[in-house]
Amino acid sequence: MQKIISSRTGVIIKQPTGYSAFIPHKLSENSFKLKKDSEYETLLSEASIALGELKGITKIVPDPDLFVAFYIRKEALLSAQIEGTECSLDEIIQVEEESKQFKPVHEVVNYIDAMNYGLERLKEFPMSLRLINEIHERLLSDVRGEERAPGEYKKYQNWIGFPGCQLHEAAFIPPPPLMIAELMGDFEKYYYMSDESPVLVKAAILHAHFETIHPYADGNGRLGRLLITFILCQRKVLESPILYLSLFFKENRQTYYDMLMNIRFKGEWEAWVKFFLRGVRNTSQEAVQTASDILALFKLDREKISNYLAKYQVAFPCYDLLCHHPILTITRAVKELDSNYPSIKNIFDAFIKLGIMDPYDKKERNRSFQYSKYLELLRRGT
Image (cartoon, rainbow, N blue to C red; front, top):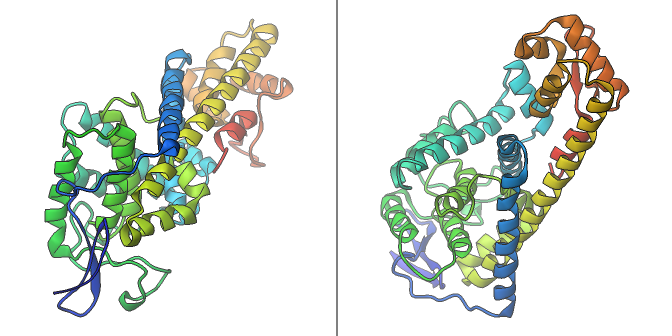
């Protein structure tokens, strides 16, 4: 094989079949050091403080599981949207309400399932290549890419470029299949290496390196972003998956892709790490603000119920159900609360008069109603 170009990150080598693939240096053997200037130190400090404030939010909210559940949905949705999946938060909620799925929504539901599965497994077992394969299999089950060996490393050369481009038109050709097992073995080794890198910096490096290896035929971007959450939770930087960093990547999608390319061909690790830290800071601050706004809304609406509907025993249980299912039918509320149709309809009518709820659709039967102000807060960025 003929070496063509070399950088801090890796080398481009011509393969026997004629194309040139990028072969990253092994992280565990790489001697390069990040250049740490004042901007780096400031961003690392600001990101750490913002993430600490976000971590603290779950300790003061009355129902932390509610926040975690919706923040997971938001991260899953945003990560899928980066890949071009056309789907909305409302559709995710309605899937749960109606138990119906179509392909784009299924991709997001799989992401949620893969995240929950990975986090549960990490409570008992360390991160491993086997676990990464298991998570990948869940991610691609019955969706786009399902025919491309979910849970197994790629068997054929893949590439990155514009939709429909051929190998010779690719913007980036990752390592060939025969090198993946070795490179992923090194990925795992570096994951557990003791070094001086702060966890946030190590997460940034591991994410970029995973995307460069591109070990699977499909789903690499979504899995690479999932790994960020797993790293932060396993290293106890976060106690629950409440950082939807994909919001920042989506809002800066082209820069995100450009940064990853510049790592490969120009060795610009410092710029990437700063970009990543800026994303952690900004997203943490946004998530804290959203949580504060949601808490204020809940407080206001609970006061309305206390002032006007306290005599109705089912009023607060119905409101709590609405918080967990902000698109809700009377039929479901009757079933969930073990109540009757007239009682729940009266509460829904009262919620509408108080400005808490309004109709979501115009169906004649089994109409859905929405907690619209709450949904507006949850939809931010999506």
